[in-house]
Image (cartoon, rainbow, N blue to C red):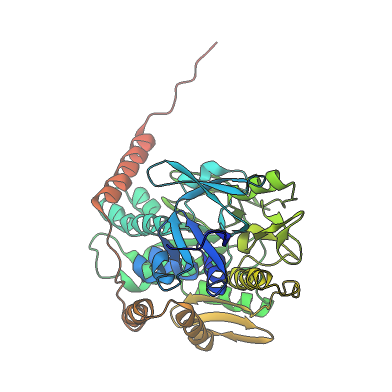
Length: 451
């Protein structure tokens, strides 16, 4: 990209909602903008669970980052995972796809690296209960979900088949509720009639959380409506239930009544998020405080204390207990982009960042959602139509919107799931897990050794 020497260099780490909207706000700024992202695509994360449950293809929720900025001549995109920030020399270090590190200098840095899954110190759970933060996660979960029914069809042991037909979702926030609802739709609506040895409608879907209600950030009325709908479509909602262990064949939970084992071959984790590890390294380099989730505590203008050249936005920032939702990233990204643009134009500093809460919305099942919009509460079909319109409007224009509408029509008006393909590698991995489980179950108990 041709740029004039001496131009102000703005580096944006991350091409999620925050990075995308920050870069867009800088499209007419007198600056050279560099976006660093670990993958070549931007993910529309609110709909990623629909990739995992076969409603949408990865292409409907993932758009090439370069496509967004094709016509933005002051912006370049580099693929690489940022591993370090040197605040003294003002450079960031990234690692390319081939493992080769490279450095990019900056005059202004925007940290928008997002968040990952938090297992609250039990990272070993990740092997058995993956989260849902990337396209890779979604494709892996889709394979686990649909191959579970295939494994159950092959089983001759009823207990083993029952384990394959049990799905445990940990976390009753929006993602957990949406996943549990879609799993129930798959089992009760999509798959019946396709199998000869098993009845998919008998699958057990369990939603587990230690909180006292689903969707705890929603109003009590919306939370109750969502729970009622989940139970109606066959989801077993287990609240006040803490997960204490997860392994290949199940989940151990703890309640006021004691400890219980849930035998399940498919587990999904949606219970918490943590800032990207890069946030902690930046906090150490700048001396900025960070909260328990690793998010950096920022000034009201979203700069790092003592470093007006570094902005932190979205899921990486800690400010006024803002929720970890897409709107915070969108609004903070736009705010920072405009702030930098005004700085470069010599304009006086504007107002501190103010988050405008547009409300919460979550889909529960086909034609059913709940919404809290600044005093307005909707549920059922009305909430679902609002959910549909909002998400369609925020999808990238063009093919994403058109193809998503077609796939939604096929799934919601009919029974089909357009995206159910599972690769042979994924099937073999699940089969190997089943064989290992069967061998373990068949092994004789250990013989006590006398002293």
